[in-house]
Length: 330
Image (tube, rainbow, N blue to C red; front, side, top):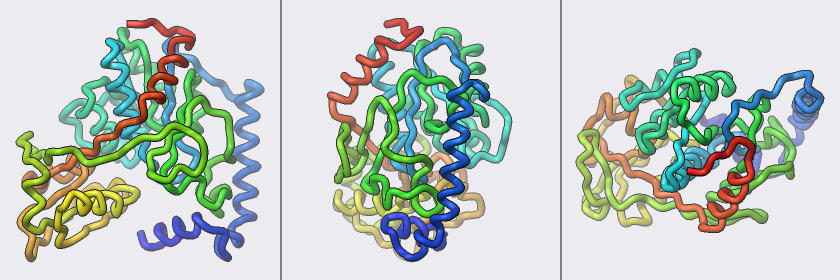
């Protein structure tokens, strides 16, 4: 984990280590560029599944807030009466097959983010290594679906898409170099339909979004406790996300006194993890981590993240969706 954090710091500047990795970045750029050409000229097949597909992804390695964006889009489309489904690779799962996610699916088998999307939105979710297979399976099982949202997959060109949404956090494009010299999966700028910034300091033009913690913390039995009630006594906080400090800082900003900040690797499965509580009597975690943590520590409090894109984002999305092939309004 320490090596990963060091590399992420290097990706924010053009230091000696980043420069040392530039030859590898050049090779990576040639290979990814050649792959794109194969899709463009039809050597590699792109499949259209018959309903509009919205891909929510990024061009930088690491989390940038894609999953909250997916959930916000799903809820927005559901509020318009549309039947929406979600596909995902299911990053970090210990299975490789194509399977539908249920409310009681083990996050270790379907991925923590697909499990969260299913539980939070109620939308049908299918995970598969190939998103085309996931989309086809989703439509076969739920033929009433009108729109598919892909959680990640901007570079998964085998699945034809109607709308591409590129998500950035405060890192922007980092040092602007390709992997492994920088954080970029592909060169930027690139063509996409919408750019959405989930951070507080957008580096370039695009729509903005606000992120804040929900007013209540939730336990495994679905009991809710106002977050303000947890702000008095000291608590421990654990996070296994790309940027755990962001969660800790948001808690502190809400007046929560944290005795111990426990940062774990992104997508940590919590198997064998034990909460040592020398002082604190309560444990707070992210909504994504709770689905795994509750299996061993049901008393943990999950604090949901409320993600709100600016109204203009949804207006632009609706306009593009209305002109997409195969779109049928509710």
